[in-house]
Image (cartoon, rainbow, N blue to C red; front, side, top):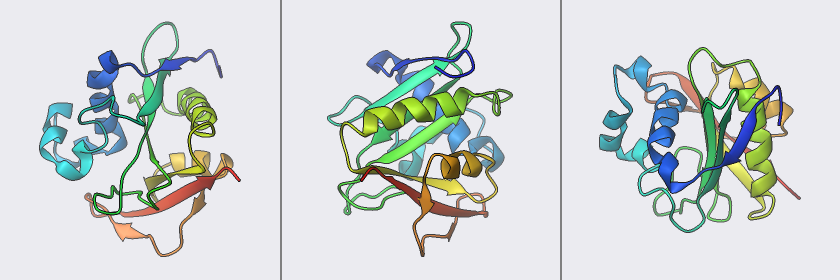
Length: 169
């Protein structure tokens, strides 16, 4: 728990909230989308939530005062079906989203801390994709994530993104 943030494991009932947090994480509003439901028609984004609860999926949701304000979740991808932050088949990818207006108050830090604790029990590390302009880049660096060389790419919005990885060994 950080800054009064209460965190709990993601359940199947949280799938709708994961879609909402993916909408935030993907900056979908900046791309002209108005609803998390629109993400379901974008395969390269839908893969982060679609069919939540399959083997290996885990994550946390949390917030303050009993409200859900953010989520951090981990999903495995393969070389044949990679996602944006894919590194290898042994390293699952982390996605994290915090509700608008609540960034910078400790919600993301609490979520990241808890999901990384859980990830340490299941895998040798986690990866993620982040925009270079995203203030959360500082959070990831503080947590020990490092840039994977040669991964800078132009993202869906026309900005630059990189893949980062946090190894546990």
